[in-house]
Image 1 (spheres, rainbow, N blue to C red):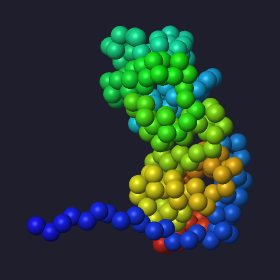
Image 2 (image 1 turned 45 degrees about the vertical axis):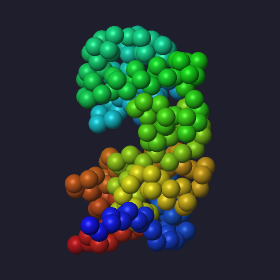
Image 3 (image 1 turned 30 degrees about the horizontal axis):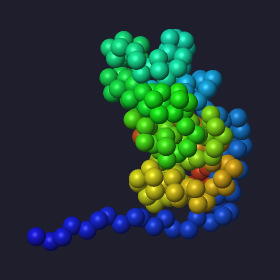
Image 4 (image 1 turned 135 degrees about the vertical axis):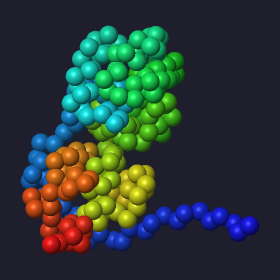
Length: 225
């Protein structure tokens, strides 16, 4: 039998600095106040809210978390709660069984290994149950002011359409964006890209006629009427 070969990384063509600067300027002009839309007061709350936000709107999560945060003020509280009770508390966010297991596993590790404090380190965070690079970078960037690139479905889609990456895997897209976006802009850039993806550059029917980045978008040029 022929040997299987590993898929090679896509090499993203160099993106002109002028294009990157124009995109950053356009995003800043249209979304100057972009920020995290999840409500939280500390790193643990943001971590819990981010886990709940998977396949769920931030608006729905923000409806659930006030009572959740009051009921479970510490990692130990989540870790020791009856699983079925926690499932009921988060049921309206969807996929509640998996989310409850992730929350308990994550909080058990935080309580037992890190004294109840969310670690402010990417490599440590991604070892926690239910925490991937996207969730870790959300927490680091917003709760600890440690810059990171958050590649959710919106950032993935918009980055590809703009021509900022040729890759399809989130971690490779993260790497591509880190190489061209100034580090001090990483967190806000992602918030702005998410807003653009939600409001304008939607998956099925992007609103190209009102897109502020249309002059710089590869997808718009290839789909010009």
